[in-house]
Image: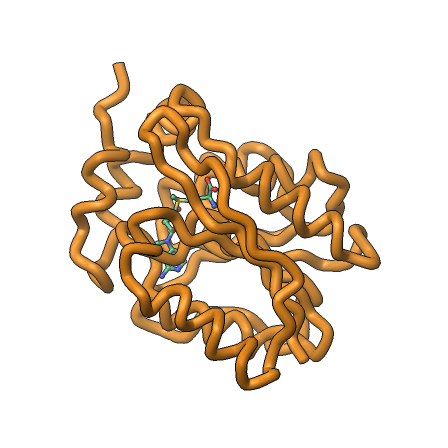
Length: 204
Ligand SMILES: C[S@@+](CC[C@H](N)C(=O)[O-])C[C@H]1O[C@@H](n2cnc3c(N)ncnc32)[C@H](O)[C@@H]1O
């Protein structure tokens, strides 16, 4: 039986350290998410595949967790995927799948460990929002992209209740620092009646 961490995740205080939650959740994470129809990895992978010019180019799966997102990216045709996450126990499961070229553990108190310009594509799938990484990660990942690079991400309903999440996307687009290629509202975790916006931005 799953311990039902999904409901706990959205009660972690915004900006709090979520490593304890995900380290305890790691073993049952995939079963609980699959049982509830988690579909955002497939939605983002399909969106990114639509806009990329080179699916063999390096793609960073930031907040890769156990690798469910990497599996969806691989199934959509991406072949050079690196993973980063802050939770060792989630990464242990990802590592066993051999989807990722490299796997790096990040410290949430430090800048994101991404070499600027190294990735023409970055995905943050189910990562930025209540119960996971802070909104400041959005700017860090956008700054790490080269000109013309693609950033694909999701904000679920819990994040969308807070105007600052959408405002962050608009801030980049309205200042012409990025072009919004796609914004689509649709299913996230149907078993929990949760939807999400999926975005693809191109850095100007
Ligand atoms: C809901 S899971 C999503 C995992 C994976 N992308 C997926 O689609 O299954 C959120 C992940 O974000 C990670 N996370 C939380 N805070 C983070 C941060 N500051 N930087 C990177 N990853 C973080 C957690 O460890 C967890 O693996």
